[in-house]
Length: 258
Image (cartoon, rainbow, N blue to C red; front, side, top):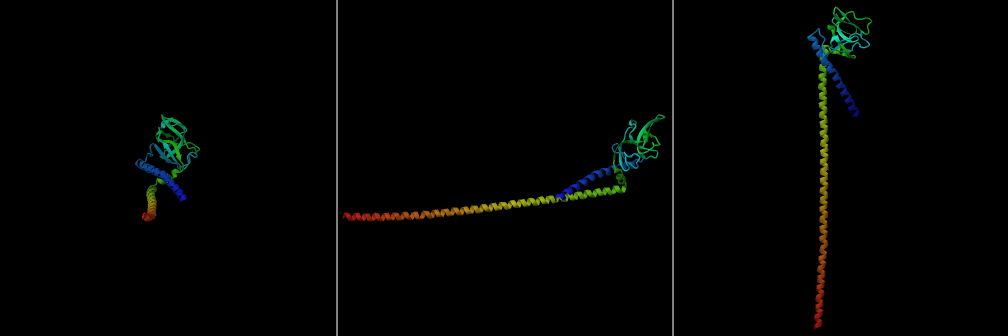
């Protein structure tokens, strides 16, 4: 039983952990999909943070393929050399590379960027308006999972799956609660029955003791009466004897007088 309870606790914690991870990711992904549909030219953000899935190894070994990177919207004028930024290139795809230099041409500031794993710098210069955000951190391998989740069919399947899991978990928890209540009721009933039996046994014992005590008292009273009866008879006999002797004595005296 102990091993079963331990296994159940571990299973419950794993389930809770999966829900805590998958549910927020699913909600964020749905929110991003809605934003993307509303404006195809704008990268969706969540509270000023933009997630991107890494599709190439140009920033290895710092950032790997399949990672989910988080960037923060920032004022481009505050960026400096060695910052890692996400930006749009001429093909309108988002690239995440490091700033290796900042130059000005015709009064316009540009960033020169390069991937850490590339041998040469990027061919195109990056303008302020192309910057999507400053690299903050990465979540290893989560990008691949999110890429699958982003598919409409996957979203529907996960949504239905989580709903079914919640319903089953609620049902199991409810049944467990009912079983526990039933067990507690049975234990309470047994305890009350035991108390009632003990009370009846105690009352029966007290009744027997009272009955025995009454019988003993009655016997003592009878024996006392029997003892007092011979004494009365003895006193009567003594008086008779005394009376007889006195009569004889009177007779003797009267004879002498004559």
